[in-house]
Length: 373
Ligand SMILES: Cc1ncc(COP(=O)(O)O)c(C=O)c1O
Image (cartoon, rainbow, N blue to C red):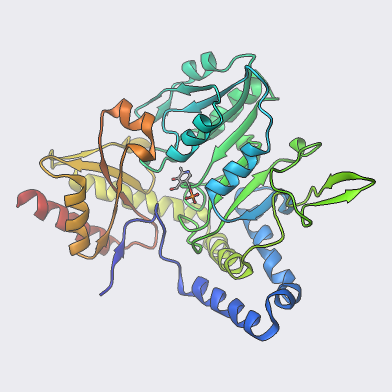
């Protein structure tokens, strides 16, 4: 029984080539043992940095391979000493786990409004003041597919004060829409492999700009990213968040996935995803029972909705019975967003470019059948 995956914002189907790369690497380990295999195929493993640096336009050594966005985001924020009385500025689409972090550390965060998918720049300007230490934004939220203008935010933040640390959560956007860390002017960008990059689960990364590296100590140090010299800790500047242990097979798989994107061209993928999202929306626009929450002008592959008279779980289960994978978002995924929208739940359909128009037509038919029941 074949499933159609419209939960790419959860995790995409990986290509055969990606799975084969992982198997291939595991066979290297079978033959050479974990440590010797990593030495022998070091160059092949390092291709990951080259390919990701091409995709997001940075230097190879500014990237560290990590297990997830949450891990990357936490390891970075845990490395910072938040000066007393300083504040953090975030957007009202902030990811649930990030909010848990602010609360856990009792950080003073200020929330900037997004209206119909567009950041309120007046509000952003007022929320940033002389005590702002960090601005952290979510490029495309888990629970809402509007694409946030992170370049315009970066420009404003750095014009107000170049010392403010600008962090971008690109978990849902990397491999999905174009990202150029230089244009965005971000200091840090984090992402996961299993979503729009179509890599394996358990993979992610952090991009970390050189200007912040002096005197910076990642919160997890070991013999890989640090050494003791003259009784002092010296931190490795290259790939500085990486520790000794990781999964080379998964890195190999993620590299294969990113290489596929670079070969195809992200511009083509981005356009195709958008075209398919618009197709879905236009076919369902005349059904007033379906309420979508994204602004059609800034659509990504993530489309969220409710259907009058149905609970999200009913829709999810119904689609599952038709072999369609979707997902449900609840306030846990973004407390501030759900409160603002006065919502308790929603259904998420996340389209990738490998989803075909036939698959989307089948989804549309199933949803119309459900409404007409
Ligand atoms: C916007 C956003 N940020 C962060 C995360 C966390 O990513 P991970 O589960 O890979 O740590 C997610 C996961 O869905 C997300 O959608």
